[in-house]
Image 1 (spheres, rainbow, N blue to C red):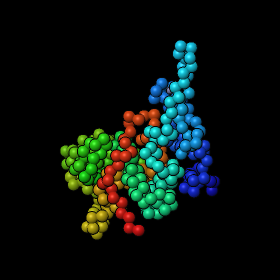
Image 2: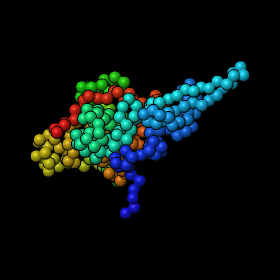
Image 3: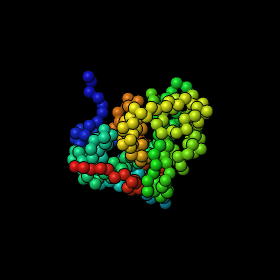
Image 4: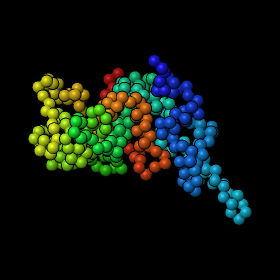
Length: 313
Ligand SMILES: [Zn+2]
């Protein structure tokens, strides 16, 4: 088998600064020359090599002539400003390496050892990565379904926390679905879990004629009245698991937090589309933290403390 272009952690550490920048550009983390405008004069910034942490800095080389005097803009922007890596003191290969293992559900204690970061850092990044996926699906939902397609739906509830610029979400739910075959995903925040609230969301994101699989929907008839085919789950199959309250019919651990639901749908989506999970996560993180679009971003420091990863050695 031919060697793939996929990254692995060992490789990441040995990258020269220039190779790393090329890779980061390829994934979309770093803007292309010409796409990134100077915040002071709107001229394109140039990426220049220099001695600081990441080895690069954005510089504005614009020169204006005023009263026969040359005036350089000289505005500089840090390499990480507005990127997924902003606000972290870890080396970029450490963060990329963390993700490479996190998407495979490696234990955080193992990741912290391999990526040479503290356990506390690993816990923070795990939480942040879940939020990135949740943001992606809430902010860029996709239309699903149609005749012959199958969509799995699920919901989860926010705990005691704030979400996105301090907006209170306590008690609210996240409702989502993913389409088998295409791996398309949508998510939406709902005020409650009532049929009156959820049905309009289903009708908004899932085309009629779709077969819908749900393991919690109580009112089986209402979906069929709306032109959907509902696959009823035989709960007796997994009765023991369900009784323990931990497993759904699809076998996933169900702890009902929106970030975990997003991560679950991400894994399913990658498997359906046969894409590399690491590279797909990089692509999503780059989309959510585009330095040329700072207004669309969430403050990376605003990470939920709702998730407490269990670390038993
Ligand atoms: Zn400038």
